[in-house]
Image (cartoon, rainbow, N blue to C red):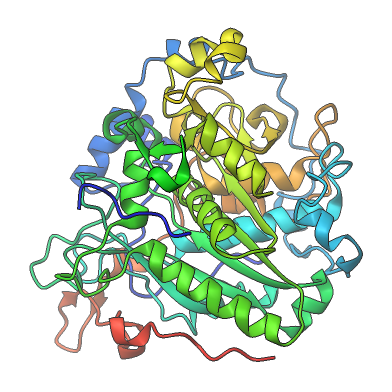
Length: 505
């Protein structure tokens, strides 16, 4: 059952070659301390984003119960995993055969007995899907001076190789592009150049499928959809309209946020990349892959992931997939995702047995939106308001994390840092249970936290926002002039290169 179009009509990852990387969701801590020696310059529009972020009233933390009361800081002297002396320790956990818990890891029992304490297999799977979501940031061209701003830096055959994710055993089969018919000025990136690759569309994610070896290890053929998120938390206040829109008469009382639905369903014949909507693109590929592997007698699952806005799109995608493809196990693992729809939306997802695991940092504002003031202020009346079709509600189970649990993270208010996906993955990697301390044998490199933030404590001597191209992407040509480099022809986006990749048994 397709959704109607909007009625409006590891090892450290290698640096990308062609894009100027600027912080996406977490402006550097140095931006908030002008006298710091590590101040990092940002484009003017990004500086304004930082200012709007830090001007959020700190009293909001009290209103929303952001759990900012500091816990006693531990000395890092006895902490081994992030200190220079331990740089030679591996960052990868063993790839154990988890096929005996295949259905449970995908939520068949609502992750009972796996969440608290967090089973090591589930922890590794959550991190795996989180890294798939992080790839949509690491491979995205944010450079407004690039003619390819808003596209993916690499073609789909090279994506995982260039990001160090080939080890996970998945192959990308299709890219997803999205646009919006409503004004969302900072939700989709635009080049300032006239000769841009697209004036309407953005690369919004991808579809991938597990290879034979990984499928045997996890116990099924796993189709993954990873959706890209966007914008800093402060801008959710300004850009999120908070308007619930019906999905149509076929869906009863189900309503979802207007802006999310527009990005998921908008299309236009006048565009190169969105003659079909993101919804149509992704569903066509999911159906193709499910049909191909089912004909071979394989057990197939669908796992949809995303961070921030990507988590919202993941839920819309899961709703549509579960409606359209009978007997397909569908699960969602989201990070820092906002509320998406009303109570009827949540009940329908539950009825269709869509399994949702929401990874949420307690101090993060975005999961409290839309309805950040109204919904949070009337929790005591949930038994009444939960029946109202205009009240937003979360769905699924929550894995709650706390930035105060990590001995590596700074204390105090850092609104964009709380929403940073790498910080989320760091906290997942160190999580044991709700009543135990951060595990000190965590494998994931803590340095990754500062890729696009300044969350790490100064004692670790890791510069904030270090993930960027040399010379901000400029190269010196043969005439001695500094210029924007040309992309490898294979990495130049083209709507004609986005056909399905042949599946392999």
